[in-house]
Length: 311
Image (tube, rainbow, N blue to C red):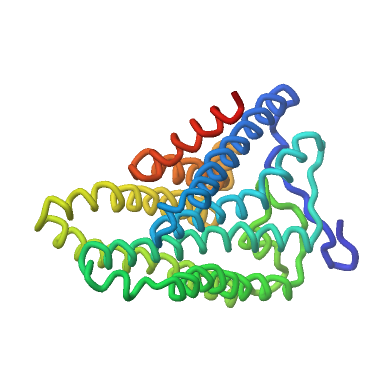
């Protein structure tokens, strides 16, 4: 809806080419995916909270990663499931900006938490004698707080800039709202928005450089002893898999949103747009749950305890 050039709501056109039968199937697949996301992340969160043995920096950061997945996916899945029952899905202007803010602050927080996990592994393997003096409870709390605060600040800047634009259209060719889709609807120049957007993107991609540099030192140190190699295999390998998972999924969406062909199949564009809201939230807790021995054993022990209580 547009009144005097001002947009009050957006139309989401990602499902326009989907038939009723396809919507029915996709609804249940989406619902199943969301249930799996809730289950695997909540299982890991509850396990880490309940098991005192897991009250260590690495697992606290992992718990923060899972909590962040619940935060980010909550901005997409409930609304998306509701849209399957609407012939012409819409979202309010303020709701659109809020959804974009939550989804992308979720991704930025993922990168921040992965940096903290890399720093933790660097200290544990390269500087084991200093580990407990550096990773104190107070410092962990501060790091976790900053890993959430900094992304919120960084993502608020481009969204505030977007909110000042005068828009000439209200049609978004996606399943959900994201900043660039709204910016492209502007009647005026978007150069400043583009520059700020790239600064934020490069800032968070530079996190990967920090992680790679820390892991070069970690690998050098780990190769010196059998214990170091075991620590690396159990804790660092899943971390690197999660980093690769999040980075690839996010880069696909960002680059396709800006430079992807407008004439491509809508189903392909839809998948590329939501994969970072589907793949990392499911795979991250599974990768850690299977790879980290303490987490895996704690999950099984908790399940056995619950089964015994029920019987």
